[in-house]
Length: 328
Image (tube, rainbow, N blue to C red; front, top):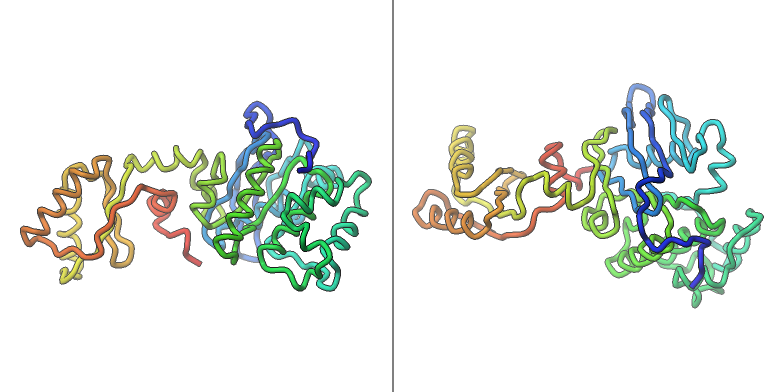
């Protein structure tokens, strides 16, 4: 395996700020895509930008990368202002774009060597191909690669200059579960080597597995920023009970009465309605579940599709915004 020049072993150094987004603003005509985004990213962490499509994740990343000029605010990367020292910024970052256009007729090895020629001190090609699990495809043309292989190639190209900071913009979108897991392994290995990684995604499981901290974004704003565990703790509930109601009174008055009854279930801390699915949040799953089932048996409600689960980042996002991470 290649040594990317880092002595780190995956430990986050919160005393060293590598990225600072300071009041970033970006508009397209009358539409404000990013509205005053602020956050800091520390050395060695995987920092996630999590939100639905259109939340402003990609635009925020592009301003930090220097690919898009902010209308307001500034971005600092490794001590360099992206508007005043863009050349220096490019020397310390690697970028995998959401959509990467590659030379389809070149082989994997040819395109790697071509990109390596752009840098005065590129890392060796062979170990990088091994790290991206592309050694067997080195003589194959890019056009014959699968979606997951193309994404791994795009990440490999972003690593050729041995960057201090790596930007990955929704790297697993459209991939099958196996290809997604392979990319997760690559990202975690990069973290182990001390790389700082900024990752945008709308997959809550991906953010939970990979990220040290998560910045929840919605409609161009930061709505929350913390570790995955602390974000879920904000719900003040460990568990969720999901179900549908059959034969329920769907009038506004009927739904109001039902919500009042659900809120009165023992140990329930909160109630959400998502289309026709009710979600109860509780710290005492057994007590709440027994009370719910007893009320159903008594005839006050008819339950369907009952299931229990742990609370997730999706629940956090919905509680804060009223919207789902999956919304377009």
